Amino acid sequence: MSEQYGHWAEAGMSEQSYEVLVEKIKAWGRRRDINNPATQIIKTVEEIGELSAAFLRREDMSDAFGDVLVTLIIQADILGYDLRLCLETAWNEIEHRVGVTENGCFVKSEE
Ligand SMILES: [Mg+2]
Image 1 (spheres, rainbow, N blue to C red):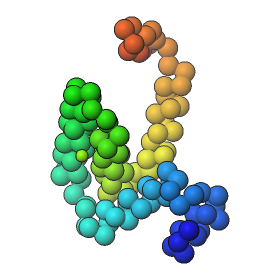
Image 2: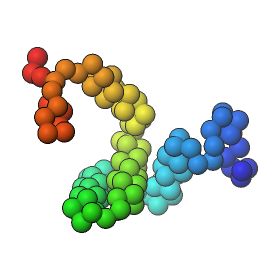
Image 3: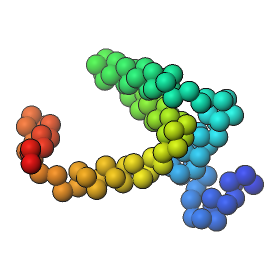
Image 4: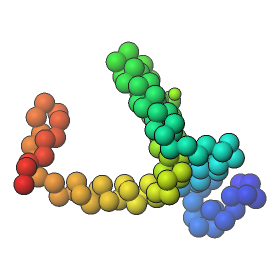
């Protein structure tokens, strides 16, 4: 465990926990002055394209999933969003959502 991440360890998180990785990625983006949300959203779309290509070619999608998340983590940091809170808000909205699953796809009921 490096000295730099000691405070995360004290909080019970491993050096490579999701939370620590998010902080490392945010710091990486800041060191490189990645601060333009308009170009960053294009990076996200680019990486979504790579994710789609990996799926369609039946290739391993691990790298593409990771790259999409990196672009979103940096975009949220640029715009001042807490992605954990965004995820929690989304979960709270979908947790009790009513609908049907057709052909493996959930279709929510109109209320
Ligand atoms: Mg990529």
